[in-house]
Image (cartoon, rainbow, N blue to C red; front, side, top):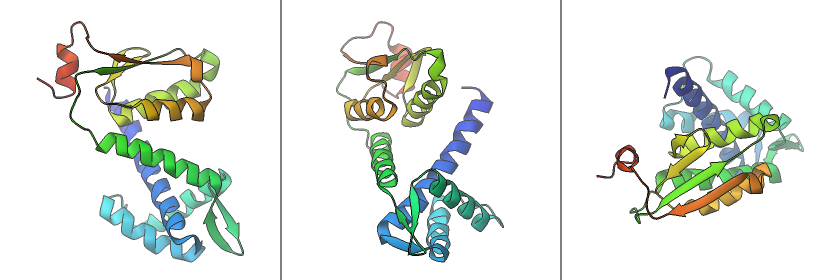
Amino acid sequence: MNKNLEKDIAKKNRKANLKKIILRTVATTGIIGVSLIAPGVLVAMKKLGLLEKGRQKEFINASRNRLIIAGFLEYHNNMLRITKKGETYLLRENLYDNLKNNKKKWDGKWRVLIFDIPEGKKAIREHIRYTLISIGFMRLQDSVWIYPYDCEDLITLLKADLKIGKDILYMIVEALEYDKPVRAYFGFS
């Protein structure tokens, strides 16, 4: 992977982590005063090593405002609360996080994902690639990706979220020709 792509992914991950922290802080408390967000988020950011000296509150406020504009949070009686859209986002992100972090014993089968997204939907194609990279998929070819663990629920959710059901094909493959580099990528001997 080239260095610029790695930097872009790292930056997106930091922003996504801050977004999730803010949403989880508001979701956990139900409704929260705007001034109370910063302390809870700062503690979570410190635990995750995301603190940037001197500008934490600025980053939190900017992220909170983006979440309001995007419809993930809303004001209710001068307090913030998470919207249905925000709750759905958190559920999806929890599924992605669980998939990334709960790798079970490999069953010997490969999960292959093939997609053909038209040029007019380039942003969707990039979103799919970013999601697959962040989960740990390996790119076999331009639009062919492979993963060793069950991820059917994730793919179903991805198809529904992006409204691209027939543009993605999910396969479970028992044998893969020339699989030595793929096995090495996932740490299998």
